Image (tube, rainbow, N blue to C red; front, side, top):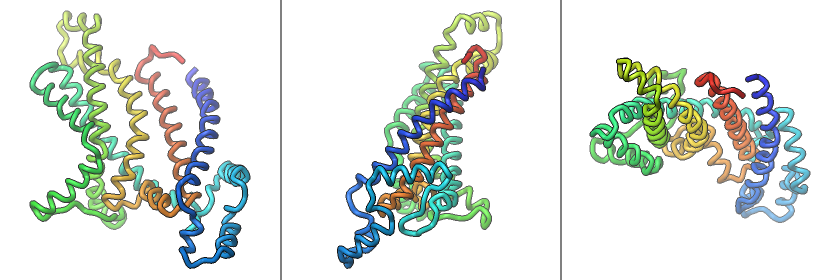
Length: 314
């Protein structure tokens, strides 16, 4: 049953990916500015511009360019960068691990904050710790990540002469330094997601704790830890998993600012530079990879429902 459901979801995902491919192909070309003019600057003559545009294949109609690009994508070819002339897939492959590491650590810190704090806040409803946790959650949702990152770089440097490591340290050169440089950006990245997950964890757990079977468990004299962790949390966590599936793309999207601020050579910063340079193949390739990841994440989240709650049948 689960296999059949996953196959159906994959078939449904194909039209979504086609629509997304059309969007990621069209939108970069709506950005003001001409990549050919940027590459040749103001010294070029009209003839030079036309020759370079023809060489890059940008002189053909957009539908023709789209069909050709889609055919290459189907063969696993995302094209070449207009600036470096290197394969886009190779460029993404070099930078994707950095973005994945940052997103993974950000998700880890989000869950580390959300689940324990949400459980304590629900178990101690309307207590001082509950009010404190809810206030921090609202603050975490309100503070922009770029503003917090800027403060954590500037203020410690002014007050104590300390600033976090910027730039990038390879894992092979210094494993400890590599992991350490990602901790502060990951915490900043995970704060907003952790705050949202904490609020939902608290709300859903409070709803489950009011169910009849939980009251029965209290009446039987079971320990609070057993009632909350074993009987209640598993049922309350399903909507949290749903929200987590929608938050993961936001975490990946949030790496654009974080990688730029902390000088990390990830995929998001690569996309930011490509937008400034109007590097269409890179913009298309990175966005297509991100969209594909989102489809896979949503499919994984749906599959987790059956694991978390056996009552769910597809």
